[in-house]
Amino acid sequence: MKTDVLKRDCDVAIIGKGTAGLSVAARLSEKLKNDINVTVVGSNFGNSAFSPWNLRLQDTNSMFELLSRGIKDNDQISLVRKVSEEHQNAVNWLLSGSNIQVVETPFGIRPVGYATGRRMLKLLESKINNYFSIINGKVTDINIEPNNFKTFTSSKKSNSEIRSKYLVIASGGKGHTQENTTGNVSKNTNIINLVDRKGVETVDTDRAMIHPFLIKDEKTGISGLIAGKFLTTCDFYSIDKFGNTNEFLPSNIKDSIKNNDYHHLFSDLEKLFSSKVIKGHKIIMYTRMTEKDFDDFKLNDEYGQIFKNKNFDEINRGLNIVPGYHYTLGGIRIDKQCETNIPGLFALGESSNLYNERPGGVGHIDSLVLSDVIASAIN
Image (tube, rainbow, N blue to C red; front, side):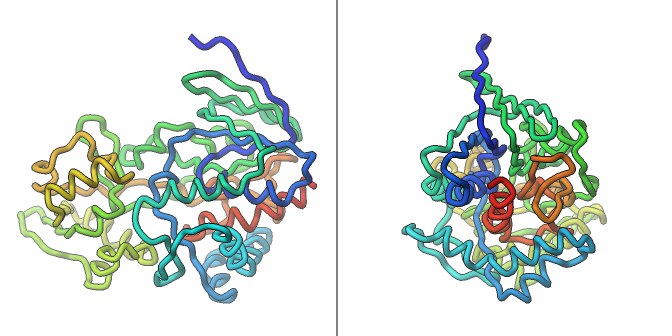
C-alpha cells in the first residue's frame, strides 16, 4: 500500500509525456532562463508511443489557409498565423542533430519505416536539459488557483504532489467514456473534463472526431486502433443488410492506405466510413499478411499490441471495423499567449481549442512553435 507522497516545488509543471508534452519541455528547456526549474509529469503509456508522426510542411499562406479554416476568434487567428509562419523552422530544429531519415508525403514528411512513435519521444527527450525533472505517473487531480497549482499523480511505486507557479497542460486529454473510443486513452484521466470542473473555460467539447480504423474487443468492450504495417496490407469491404459485399474504397484512398500516406485524406475516410455505418452496413477488413509476417508484427511492432490475444486464424477471417469517437474537436480555451482564463495556466496540443478542425500532421509542430509564446510569458 502506498502511503508516502513525494512533494516537489517547481516554477513550471508540464502535464503530458507524449509528443505535445515533450515538445513543450524540449522547447522550454532551450528558451527558459536556467534558474527556472521545470517538472514534467505524465504516464509512460499513451497514444504518442503508438502513433505515426507526420510533419506537415507547406508554404505559409497555404498552411494558414488550412489551419484557420472556420476560425473567427482573433486570439486563435494570431496563434495559427504564428504556427504557419514558423512551422518549417520548428521542424528543422526538431530534426537537427538526429540521424532519422524522412520521406516526403503528400503534405510534408514522415520517418522512414514503422513504429515511429517511440522514436519521436526519444528524440524529444534527447533535447530536454538535465535541470528538467520528469515524473512518471497518472495525473489524478489538480488544485487550481491563479499562479498556485498542485498536480497530483499516482504510479505503482509512489504518489506525487507537484506545486508550481505555472502549469502547462500539453496532454491529449481526449479519454472519453463513449463506447467506441480509442482504447488506450480511455484508461487515463480526461484532463479536459477534470479542469472544466475546476473552473477552467472549455469550448466545443461536444464536437467529436470519428476515427475510421477501430476494432472492438468483444470481451473487454475496448476499441483499438488499426495502424502501421498491418493497415497497409488490408482490403476493406462493406456488407449490406442483404449480405451483398462491395469493395467500396476509391482507388486513391486504397493507394494511400497501401503507402501509409492516408492522413491527408482523413476527412474523406471519416465521411466514407461513417456513411456506410449510418446506412446499416458492416465494414470488414481482410489482411494480405502471411501468418509468419503477422506473428512478427504482433510480437515486434508497437501497433501489434492490440492483437496480442488474437491468433492468425481469427484475423484471417476478417475484422469488423467499428468507426468511433476518437477525440473532441474542442478543448481548453486559450488566448494569444496560450493562457487560459486562470492566470498562470497554459494549454497546448490537442487539449486546447486552437483549431476549429483537426488537420493531420500539426500536432507536434504547434506545440514546438507555441512553446516560444509560453516561454516569453514566463520569462
